[in-house]
Each structure stands twice: as structure tokens, then as C-alpha cells.
Length: 118
Image (cartoon, rainbow, N blue to C red; front, side):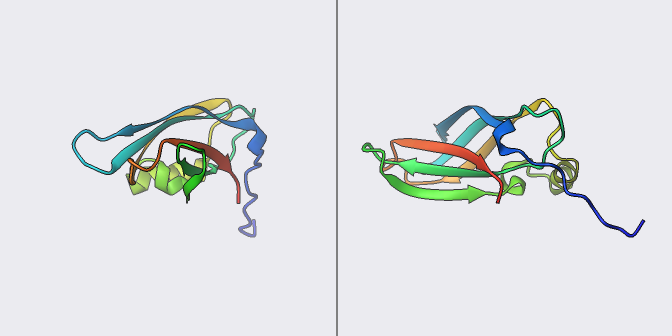
């Protein structure tokens, strides 16, 4: 009645990256795509999490670490993204992302991806 919004419940333990892969763009140097499937295993809607990508060298030493907001890794259509953000991740669901990145792929030999709530 007074315009208050109750935030969606969030439980990071119920979110998982089921699979992920960094794939080089064959047409453009320095461009790679992070392909990943993100799952909400909870029986309730959750807000989309932040995504952290860490690039590592051959000794698993960190070369760079970058965080991406849901609006950055979701669909590029701003209307769809805003609707998705408002609705949140459906219960017991999963979705696939394809995130283009500009990196020095020759230095990076590994990566780690994780989800978190700020």
C-alpha cells in the first residue's frame, strides 16, 4: 500500500555454474566468449547474482579478476534484461549465458568463474 518492495530471498548456496567454457573468436583477435550454464536449485525465485571471472597463468596465478553484473551477462536487449532482472531467476531453473570478453588470451591459460551476491 505504501510502495515498499520486499527483496527476493537470496541463497548463494542454491546457485551453481553447471558448466563453463572460454572459447576464442575465430574472426577477432583477443576476443573470447565465456559460455556458461547457471542454475537456481532453490524452490523459490532468486535475484540474479554477480559473476566473477578470474584469469590465471600456467602456475594458476591470478592475471586478472573481473566482476560482471547481471545486466552485463544477460541478454543485450535492455527491455528483456530489465524484465528478467525484475522477475528474478525462476525456481529450479537454469539459463545459458554467452559473454564476449576482450583479453590477452596468450597470457591466460586457465580461468575460474564463480557467483556471488554483493
